Amino acid sequence: MTKIKFCGNKTASAIEAMNEILPDYAGFILSPRFRRYVPKDELTRLTAMLDRQIKRVGVFVDNPFEEVKSSLESGIIDIAQLHGSEDDNFILRLKELTKKPIIKAFKIASDADIIRARSSPADYILLDSGTGTGKSFDWSLIKNLGREFFLAGGLCPENAAEAIEKCRPYCLDVSSGIETDGEKDPEKMKKFAENVRSKK
Image 1 (cartoon, rainbow, N blue to C red):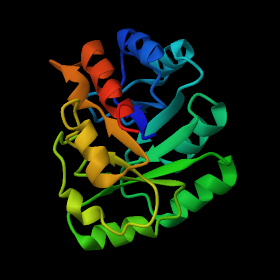
Image 2 (cartoon, rainbow, N blue to C red):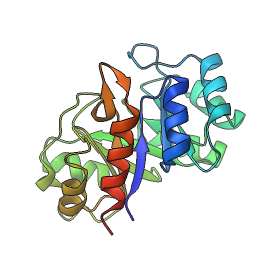
Image 3 (cartoon, rainbow, N blue to C red):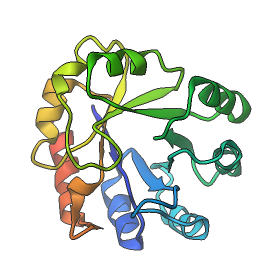
């Protein structure tokens, strides 16, 4: 079954909803220049509330290497998602030193982007239209990718099943598509999970 990642979490109410729904992954933005940024003290509080069945993903956008490394080593997050210009060397060093899984995000606009994503040494790749654009890219580009991937960008309860049928992703990654007025909406979160889990 396709896995579920709810990203951009920053409130206790979002955590409560996730503990009821049990997505596979919960993402937290750890780069200060983004609206959904969660400071370290708040991250500690929120992740302590989160059901341990849910993997905690720290989302970094060109953060210093040592900061990402220490976040993984501290155990406050289980997985690092790199959403900036981090290169293969950055990923390989991080994997070697922390022994933790790495997700590398790629902005997809052409076949060349797919080729680049396919060759990444990251444990997982994430295909997106950008950083928090709320829009999807041309899913037909995904054909013949040849490895498991997270799909992000423009996802919502209404198109989750279609995304699974057309793209066959390992995981659907959603943020703004489960929000109302910029905040996580428990009803949209539930509906998204229901629609994903209805696809066998």
